[in-house]
Length: 386
Image (cartoon, rainbow, N blue to C red; front, top):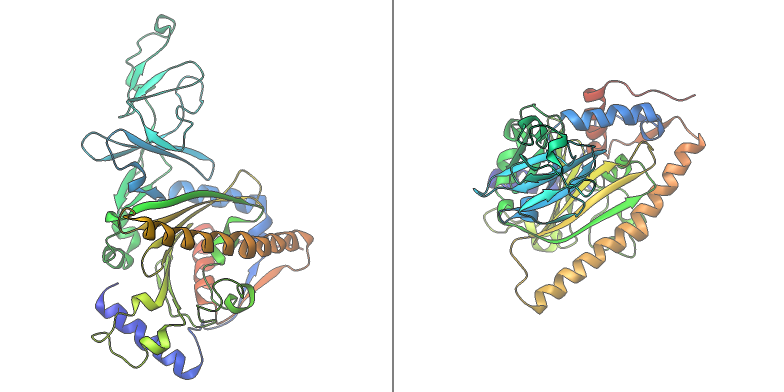
């Protein structure tokens, strides 16, 4: 985070601490429940995922030549491969013969990719390498039979793709004002310390929503992060459809309050939440990042899948550091699996019950409002229920 941004954030926190307040939206927002339960809305969102640059992982997941990772992004199977010159290529993970996935593993290293169905194989650049019983299929070197390539860009260590073949991708202007800010963290030097896939019986937006307000912290997270993060005190700034929200740690007041940006680094005493439209959340946690890549799963609005990664500034160096990451990961998983997801699943059931037509986002939840207004602008009005 640049010096001038830290200075503004510190001044804003100082104001909120002095007035026992937080960033406020101009008015209360009513958000339709249909956004979380309507299959037609989900279909619109899946189309949005196909025409918007999305983060599909961190480049360290395939750091070496011939290494790869796979992901199913809103129903689109993707294969990302590191080339011999260090660049990346992304493909639809689909064999051109009969449509099976050519790679079933989450990640690894290959000299080539072979479809498990009929053993058609492809080079790491996506070109067709071999067709079994090729005399039955004409010219096996036909370029049209290669893997379908997707636009891909590696920026700030993150791998961005467009799920539309033949489109153009340019991440810097898409990020706008956040591009320079993300560059200050040196994320391209980070490594993937932990990685897992979480599935839940709730709409994908409930997962994202949970990061976009601290109003719930002391109520839901009394046994985990509640004692360490201030409730209902969050500077927020929008950057086009993206946003940055700052959570204030309990250590902020004794260590930072009343001091200038030249006297103290505020970053160890805050949690910075970057919402990268539409479905990625990056959380700065003083000595590491959490990356949340959240997708709808299938055609059910009540199903979601999240790729969760702990990004560390360097590989683990010793047992003490390993134990530290073990503790961080345990706290994260317990908070999500024992507190956030169970409550989110009750919300999803409540939405299906028809108890209300709208959710209420308070003035103290500007990041939530910004996210859902950005979705509405990108897709049009949400259908309303009864």
